[in-house]
Length: 194
Image (cartoon, rainbow, N blue to C red; front, side, top):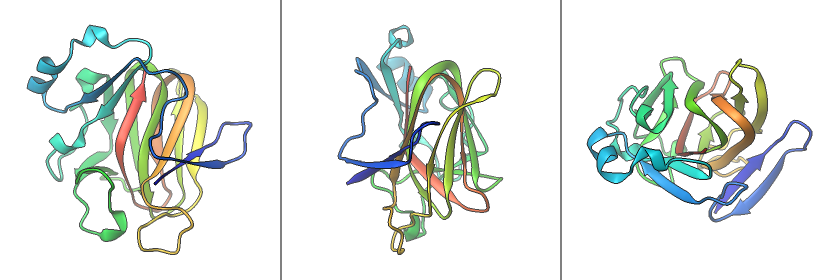
């Protein structure tokens, strides 16, 4: 079961159960985005990426402890302060695949910048602290924010399960940040929709 947390600037925090989180609009195309260029060229013509296209990043192509920056640049996203890991700590278990992203070398922070503005971003997160997902416009002004209100480590007494789905929706998102002050977090199933 996946839990979803959403918070708009004028709304209260709410959690919704769903087995498959979907963007709040009709998706015409969903593409699994590989980090390897040869797979990119064989899979899709990038000119088909248009309105209502969603991309899900395949993190399994990444090597453990690989610094993640421009591996998905051809798909329209660049990461900062990100590393791929395969968690050995059972508190950070994943529900899909072995590889996750973690903020490093600065712990508790990860940024994704989009080469073209997007309208929806989501990821499954497990965190040792409260985690804030913030979206920014082209002038680096905050336009939306959602949060995981408390830690959700596996095998803990948290009311939230690990791998809680956080999503954020706003027009013209140019970047997002994941921030857990003085904490660690992992994310997987990173998706964004144009």
